[in-house]
Length: 294
Image (tube, rainbow, N blue to C red; front, side, top):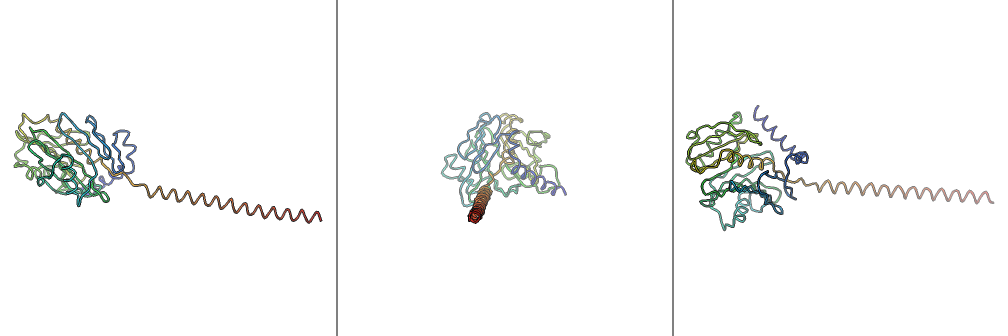
């Protein structure tokens, strides 16, 4: 029952994004391109360019980037986009790879350790003949931060704890039982459940049937403040949930043109029919006038 309710919430969110995004822009400004739209992150440096939405947080050494990419499949497109962006000839195998079904389709979730100072998290999905890629890059050598999205194993649970445990197992040597619960913290995008230890921090937030996960490793003295960590997680989730493909309205444009042409041709035909009738009436009047004169 709860799963059906959550799916309804996801569908409602998608419909609002596609049909009512203009009113939402009054509250949260959007980066708009010919291919996609994505929220502009308040307080982040806007480094966006043509067809690329890019926002940088210098204090956190983090960047969130949305772009279209080419490739044989979503993982290949995401890897090519990341390698090209970071100037790398090739990438090592991802430290995490999975899939998640969001309201607008199936996304591939990937995470990479690029080098000792950089880690990257990505989600990617097909958009017509190309792929949309949303990337989170952190370049703080003192810590490692990853952002993931994982489908809930049990939709009846109101806690992201199982997904947090799964994520920790796959990208760190830790288990959730080794971290202490720090509590739930509210962010603009939702509530985050936080666990921490001397060397790690994990936060999870549920939306629909999925858990959004933020992981950070590093010594307690090197980790950023909890509020800054949660702000990063919330910015990542807001970008993933707020993103939507620009609707293709060309069909409606041509339909409107066709209807306008039909109305114009009908009007011209009406004028021609009326002119023909008037000529007939004029000829009849002339004929009657000639008969009276005789």
